[in-house]
Image 1 (tube, rainbow, N blue to C red):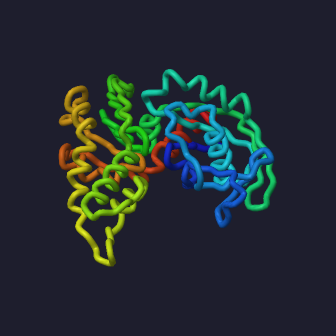
Image 2: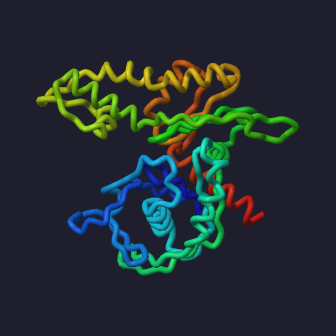
Length: 291
């Protein structure tokens, strides 16, 4: 079975519609969470520790998230996997990422009381953003912006003589995780609170209720615009941002899409934007392994 797996800093997604937080814990005291056993070690899924490390290829977290994603995606035991890296890391790390999976391609997994021997028979590493492009029917030139939790990838794809090529790319280390921290800090200042940085996501998503009263979130708009200044500067300086359609994907596409569209009216949010890379990765696998 061919599966696309996008192991993000915040969330792991697959082409089969599976999504879970890229966090694991082996603390025996944690209960009530979904668990998986990988090679004899029990992990709680979606709780505990994630990572902010730029290079997370050879980590325990990445391996557990990969095999968890496969176990959740299908009851089959043998998989052909396409996964990805941020564009800025792709050339430097793609071979070592592929090698790390090929070196340990099997795991004994127990999930929902079912014991399985999962085997990764083939693996391909592809660039994030480029994967998302393949998930959509996008004719002509396009700028793809993949807004993740840790990074924001920009990629310009141009068509010449019927062939699409990656003409330029940039990875900015300014994903929505830092935005959420800024939002939480602003709420703390304005309403004399002591919220953790992670609380910024719920402030963005839901009503901000303090002392039982729904409070204004007007301060969020200025923070979002400030957060995007680096992205806007890069687009204006190095990309044909006013003459080329812009497509947004990633977990931050809906959070920041309105602000990007206000600056660049031709901006569109991709369908299934959070899963776009994973879906595109699966299409890459289908092309190379079933042609």
